[in-house]
Length: 421
Image (cartoon, rainbow, N blue to C red):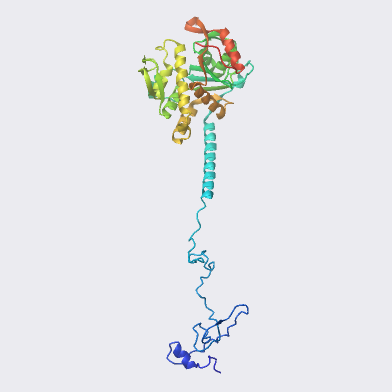
């Protein structure tokens, strides 16, 4: 039975495909095309040849079964695909437009998270460096506390960690142990901060005490210079002596030695200071001309230790206050705090040699520095302990009437009206 359309033979099929008329394998039978009942039929002249080529001379139904040019997988030419066109012939975007609002939001969140991680990491790093070695809970017969917070800030002449060359450069000598060159009470309160320098030659009573290392009880050594209490039994006896002679409770203690002081200044790149006059002192190594200048670590230490040229311990304490306030003011700036290349060296140099009490937190330490910075800008009072006159062995006697009034105002966190010397 011939299965080709009318008028076709096997031979003619072979010739149409480009063959030579030789026998070919029996081709697969072309199944009749079925038109969906709901799709209009196309009528074309000719016939259905199964290949969509069409014949001639017939108007019967025709459907080639092949695509009429649509791109499969697209959106029907509505601009969604890379080649699809819209109704007006325009082409759609090749890729979606960036969502800038989303990108900015994600970027901001990422920055906040990174800053938080950095801040937390810095906090724990700095906290681990604090040397919490002073136990104020062992201090005897402590006075009642008042409003605000009182810090005892001490600069010692400790040579710990200094090489022989550094001792020579810093003019520190090689004395064993350590003594106090600087002592200040810093009161931080709501009615202005107050910095009160305690001359190391202050003539005071050293009370009875319990040895910080031996645990033995010792009777009062009697009257002596204030710095003798520190050289006798260190920070705890110094705190007890200050509290005994003033009636003011010390909440926190902070001490730094020669080497640490110089390293902080160098880490900051120096501290700018207005030198009030020409200064030359061979004992401290001070050699300055009057006027504004930037002091490095060696120069700064020579300036605050200058005693003989200054003429008195009172004059030296004023220079110390001036420099420490400038140090705090220039270190607590955005250019230092947000710059890790300055922040970490500065903090590292200071924290490595800073000795504090066991209850001192980084928050307390920051509060102390910000208060010193505020005093520099005029938000507070800087003064010496009121002095009545000379005392034995070249020491200085306190004016106890003014001292009591000063302590009363500090305890009540009132504005200080007492004048110092």
